[in-house]
Image 1 (cartoon, rainbow, N blue to C red):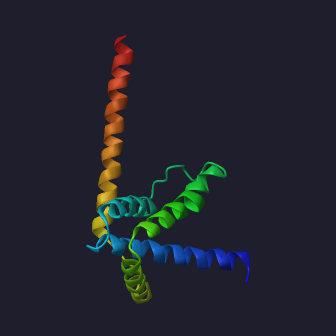
Image 2: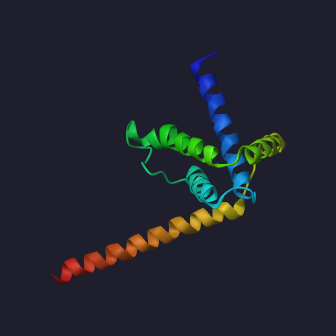
Image 3: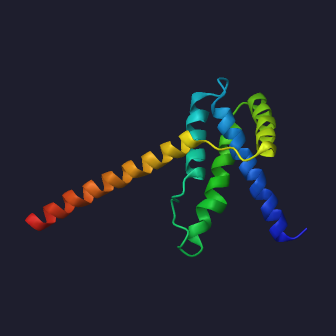
Length: 134
């Protein structure tokens, strides 16, 4: 098996684990702190905006290759084992039927990023206004 094939299989497994975590968040048996961490990790994994932009050499893929898998591993440890087994089975069924799509989650992520952009622009405007009047 080539290195690229192994990497591709690991990416599929990571995608399945991420979807299992999405299902675990919806389960009432999952503790609130695990739900909070999982929601943040899944939102970041699905977000088109990275903590470290991909165009920065080497460091750009650090969050995708290291931080995200570490966060998922941590979240998997917080979810009760019985819930995780059930959610993994449901995730495999969903992935085999077709890619899972959540338009609501996508819309929420876009709204959050737009809100951050607006706040950043307001801050820049106020900072620039203070600098001009000084």
